[in-house]
View 1 (tube, helix red, strand yellow):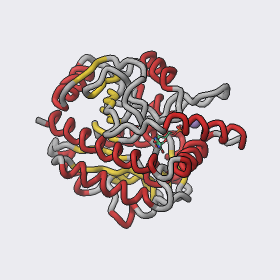
View 2: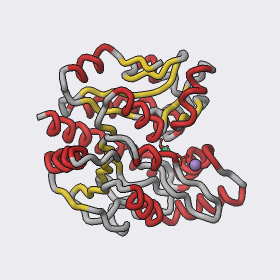
View 3: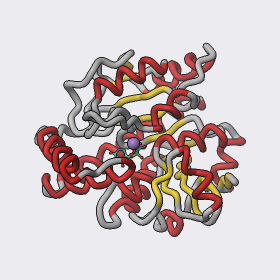
View 4: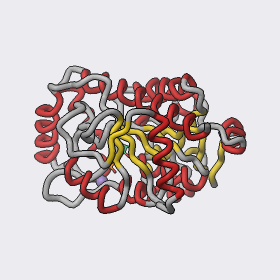
Length: 291
Ligand code: PSU
Ligand code: MN
C-alpha cells in the first residue's frame, strides 16, 4: 500500500539524504491554490541543499512517497486531511489524503525516512475543549528529525512544550534558547538544548537513537523574519472561530484563512518563507547525518 518513487527508493538504498514533506500544508495551509507552489519550492530548497525531497500523500488507493508536479496539483482544498488514523480509510476509499505531520511521520517510519520539514507542528489547542494533535503521538514513537518553526501559531505553546517533555521528545533550538512561536521567534518556552549547526543537530539525533530512544527529535528554527503584528491577530481569529463554533480538523484551515485576511496577506507570506527555510535546514541536517 506504500509506493515509493524510484528516485526516493534509490536514494534510501544508497544511504543518501532524503527529506519528507507533508501535503496538508499544500492542500489546507495556503489559500487559493498557492500551496502547490510552496510545495514545489520546498522541494527545490531540499534539492538545493543536495538532498532528495519525498513529498508524501495518499492518491489512487496508495500511500505515495515522492510525488510528481501533476500529482502535487491534486492536493486541493477538497483533499481529506489525513492524520495517522485516516491513512487506511483514504487508501481503501481511494480518497485524496493530504497527510499532516503525524500522518507523514507514520509513513516515514514504514519507509525508513529520518528527516522531515514543516511549518509548525500541531499540539495542544487553546481553550476548554480537549483537542491535542495526533502529531504529538507520532513524534513520541518515530525515529525522525522534524524541522519546524515551533508549533502552530494558534496553539497553547507552553502546554505543547510540556507535553513534548512528557513524551521524551528533545526540542532543539537552532541558534535560539526559546521554542519559536511560528510567526515570531522569541518569547516561547525554553528548548531542551540550543544548537549552533546542522552537524550538531545530526550528531544529537544519532546519539538519541543510538541510546535507544524511539522518539522523534524536534529541531526548531525561528522564522526568517518576525511578524510582530501577528499574535494579536491570532487571538482575534481564534475568538471569531470559537464564536462560530468551529472545531476539529477544520479549525486550522479556517483560522489560517482568516489570519490571511486580517493581515492583508502577510501571514501567508511569512508562512511560506518559514516553510522554505525549514526545508533547507532539514536537508542540511540530513546531509550532515549521511556524512
Ligand atoms: N502548521 C501550519 N499550518 C498547517 C499545519 C501546521 O502552520 O496547516 C498542519 C500540519 O499538517 C499539522 C496539522 O500536522 O496542521 C495539525 O493539525 P491538527 O491540529 O488538526 O492535528
Ligand atoms: Mn485536533
